[in-house]
Amino acid sequence: MQAHFDPPAWLEVLGWVSLAPAGAPAIIADIGLRGARQRMWIMHVV
Image (cartoon, rainbow, N blue to C red; front, side, top):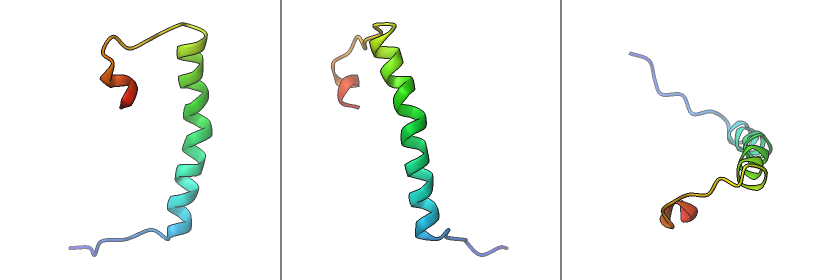
């Protein structure tokens, strides 16, 4: 059985920092250009 491997903290930060610029334009384009809105108000919070 292999031991659990925890990646270095800087690698986890790098991953989150790279996901933000990748996901934000997709969400902005979906809402801004297509006008896509959620039907349930709670989904805006989520």
